Length: 204
Image 1: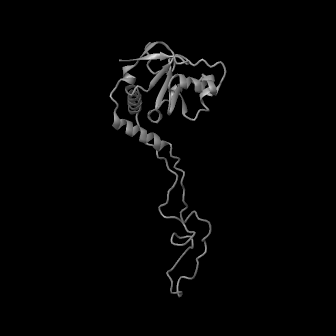
Image 2: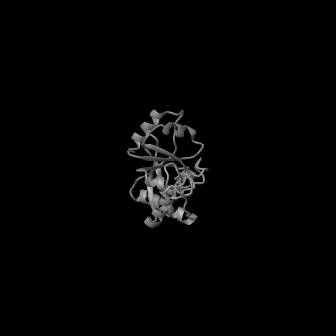
Image 3: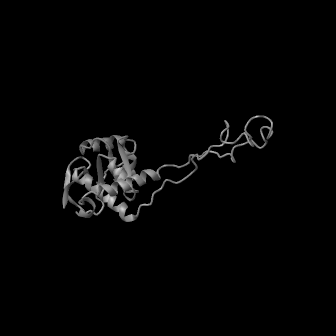
């Protein structure tokens, strides 16, 4: 069972909070992490590359020269693949690169990534964000007060517009809503910052 100091926006503490062992206390499964992250990256590929076959290239309807008597190989179209400007053989066509990953694997990968960050002491829980109006300057000061450097993932609730607008202009901060939390983004971040509202399985 892992217990963390509950931090405040100004860097102080407001008690302690216990992390859920099922989410933050498991042994990371590297094989499942690799499989899920690979599937996530594959799903981001557009798969929109497209080449034209000889049937799709414009022109080439007329026979380029007569069948016999020229001494050359017989040809039926200048849009055949062997001609410049002709069709492409076995070229890429629009396709989906998605790989099927079931819900249990996704959850195990998420818990593995969260546990890895918890074991590295890279998880911070803030009681709440107290921005009266959206201010990037105050958001930057909050990061300094919490001693957060490198890439920071802020896990926020979708209706916390003041915090979202305060942090969104900082290049080192990635904002993710609690429902969109995923293994790949966690592994790409140096710090995970939750509020008591967005912390998965929180036990105060």
